Amino acid sequence: MTEKLPSWSFPTPFILEHKVKAEEIDFLDHVNNKVYLGWMEHIAWQHSLSVGIDYAKQQEENKIMVVRQHELNYLRACVLGDELLIGTWLGERIGCCQRKRHYEIFRKSDGKKVFDGHTIWICMDMKTQRACKIPDAFIKAYQ
Image (spheres, rainbow, N blue to C red):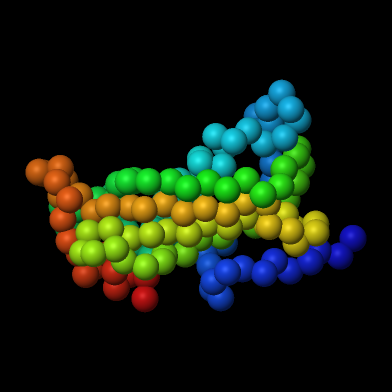
């Protein structure tokens, strides 16, 4: 079977491959809704690590990005054994302290988009636990 290329909404997303596992399946024999949220969190962290933003860098800057809001859109069911391409990219800044991160998931076998969503992340000062400006180091790392 020939795989179809996905049509990403962003030209160069950060992509991870994933094969659906038995523990991700619910009683309806498809991926449980909460699993997608875990995939979003995982790929966001892997993307951050890939550009050098790890926990040590966050401590050095005394800043951390925390979730303000998630939007999850389930477009098609995924089942055991489906091979997926999970993609993410940073979107627009919202004021000085928030940034949107987008996600899309495609099934490799047919190139169909099965999921999309976004998260609004807010920068927080680790000591005061208050919202603050996103540091330049966090912005430049992704450029």
